[in-house]
Length: 309
Image (cartoon, rainbow, N blue to C red; front, side, top):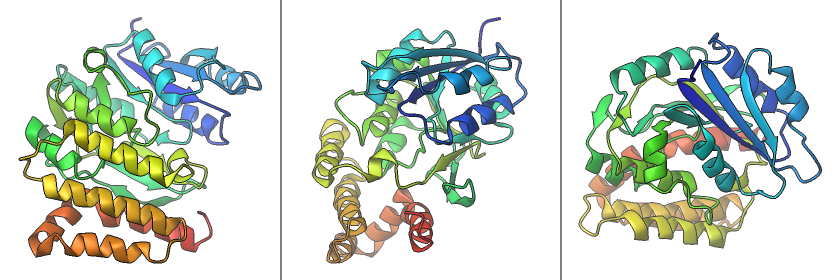
């Protein structure tokens, strides 16, 4: 049986949630060979995820390999997509999960939009214990999205949670895959590149959950690198006359200031507010709408106040 979907899972020192991620796929009730799961584990001490993968092998078609020489999750992802047998692919990181009904919903969307380069939807946000903390709803209307609108709004803020999108393997390869030099923005840039490859479709049903936790890579790396990578994506993809050009530049400044505030810089929140104020009333409204700032920030603030971050 040829799989209708390939799920790629880059793993490095598996978290306690790795088995939960696999269990969420197994719970979909699909035939064993309907979904192919490719796992590449770069744990230097040995094949740390092998035993967990083996426990699900009777119900899931798992292709597991230990690749200690390939530490980068982007390099592992590129290699896994190249090896995928299905026409459509999605990623599932070891700390995220599928929600009930995701496989059925994806099948239905692909039946209607088989030629789409990218299909995505909202995602729920969960805490380390799996408790629901809210949702992240990208600022689009359901159905086919104009490519220019997708690019312009996504350049204000990456509102696509990593486990949500399903994409064409052919479009991924044509777009050049993920930039392996990036660690903070490779997914953001990938969605933008896929948006240039063909149809983009928004499904309003949330079918995946993104876990917020203190060990996440994007919360533990250099703020200077973060700023450089945000600016790099704008330099590559932002058109000078884009309707959201000013919002995109302000968003970078706000994101950097918020990261500095999270790291303990008490003055940073005022810099973020100054950048927002500089947009004027209409610009600030559009920024808040497209960036989904409240949806992204409030769950993290609640978790921080509860001692979870």
